[in-house]
Length: 111
Image 1 (cartoon, rainbow, N blue to C red):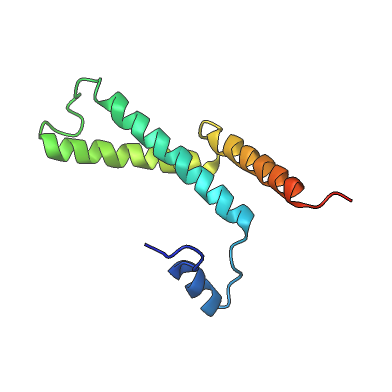
Image 2 (image 1 turned 60 degrees about the vertical axis):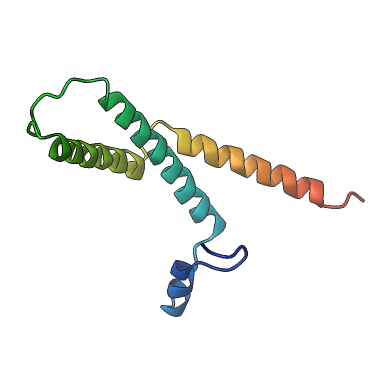
C-alpha cells in the first residue's frame, strides 16, 4: 500500500527515466477506463453463469472457465482501450472534471 501523498513506484521510475510524469488528465482517463473495464468484466462473468457451456473450450470445468475468463478479458480490454465500451469512462471523466471545477470555484475567494 502506498502512503497517501507519496508518489507510486511507476511515477518514480518514469521520473528517473526522464519521461514526462503523467498529468491529472491522464490519470483520470486511466482510472475511468479501468473502472469501466472492471464493471464490464463483472457483467460478463455474471452473464456467463447464465449460459449453458457450449463445449467450445472443452468440458473440463477449470480449463473451460479459464479460457472463458481470458476471452472475456480480451474483449473488455479491446473495448476499453479503443473507446468502444459503454461510454461510462467518458461520463465519469466529465463528472469528475465538473466536481473538480466546482471545488476550485468554492475555494477561490470572492472579491
